[in-house]
Amino acid sequence: MRISELARRAGVTAKAVRYYESLGLITPERLANGYRDYGEDDVRLVREIRALQRLGISVERTRPFLECLAAGRLHADDCPASLASYREAIDELTERIEALTARRSVLIRNLNTAAHRGSGVVPHAKPGKGGEDYLTLPADLPAPEADGAADHLPGTKAPRIALPDTAGREVRLDALGPRRTVIYIYPLTGRPGTDLPEGWNSIPGARGCTPETCGFRDHFQDLLEAGAGRVYGLSSQDTDYQNEVVERLGLPFDMLSDPALGLADALGLPTFEVDGKRLFTRLTLVVRDGVIEHVFHPVFPPDEHAQQVLTWLRENPL
Image (cartoon, rainbow, N blue to C red; front, side):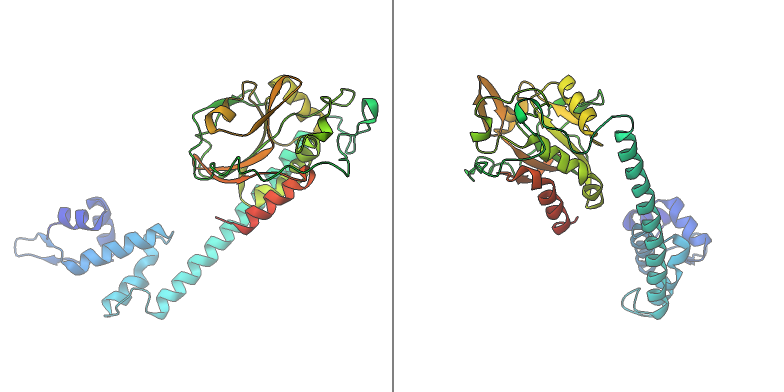
């Protein structure tokens, strides 16, 4: 067969075939007129080269596999030399992964340091007006019921909604990419010196937004190392309010604002009303490649939720 047919059947370019031939990986027959004549064995060899390349094995290092086939073995990795090549490739890949992991850890540490630098954050905030301590939860908080209000969400496509974040960007929820994005959604965060809505502690699942946020802050590096590509907090509070939260709590991640609760309307998220305001019910979405992969609902206790998400990520690696 001609080189164009070999290339088509093997799924490569004619230029690639010529390159393999120049390395002596394939050796076509020559016709009387001098033209190359490729056979079925050449198709198999080129397909093997292509498959090994997809695994990260360079063209030059496919030779032991091709020689194994030429020796009459059924599989290209039936020979000791092929197994040795596998081990070498694995060792090199392991070194690259370790180097990238180390670089990633440094970047995460730098991010955490930069996020806290100059913020004036006190690790344990003093009680606010009226004796409220937003980092400490009352022991008798009522737990929310598992009412099935979010059971329809797993497998649902993320809506084409863009929300502002505290870095001044518009974040498209349907374009977050193939890595897992954790979005913890909550009613509202209180501020020291500002009263919470009347009866806030008696509403199941309402209290605890600040401790929850601090939990995601404190576990941020662990979450990234467990496979989360991004972490966002989301509420109906405006961006200025969210920026104050980021600064006051020293958050290493951005917060999203959805004052109109467009996400709740698009996905049918549970909400509740207090003091005439409609607020998000607390829940967490894990979004991957434009689809809601997992949902945490109900969330309780909120100050332990980041650890719950971390446990799930570790138990469900990609």
